Length: 166
Image 1 (cartoon, rainbow, N blue to C red):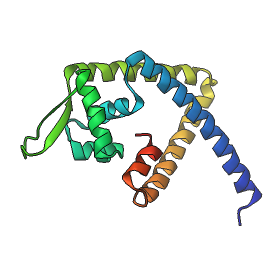
Image 2: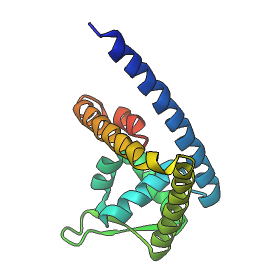
Image 3: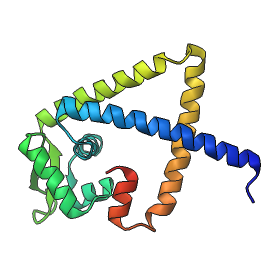
Image 4: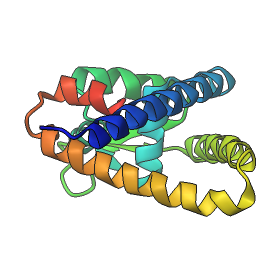
């Protein structure tokens, strides 16, 4: 049976995570309007920037996306000259996706914009509280990732995509 303390903590966590999520959604909408990229396109761009060229299967797994959804995302990125498909080097029957130079530049601009909004938010906290807040946020992000990893194997890909925001 849950203690009243753990119940209150769960309520505080829920309310705080909702506010963070709403703020992130507003930031993402503003970035989408500014960059003309959907959040799914941005996540694909980010995955390719972090990991380099990926096969369509690897990228679908990274984004927890179905192949048909990923095909649409990559088609859109190609139309914007941000990514391109090419035969895989080790197996020419497979297709890899990689960022174009314009895609790398676009990623850098978006990353700068996101970091700018993060700096703005952090500046609203008193300086002595910033590190403590970030330490707590990192601990919560790690716990959340462990929670997601436990459930990831129980979810079909389409459910995992929506859970992970892909």
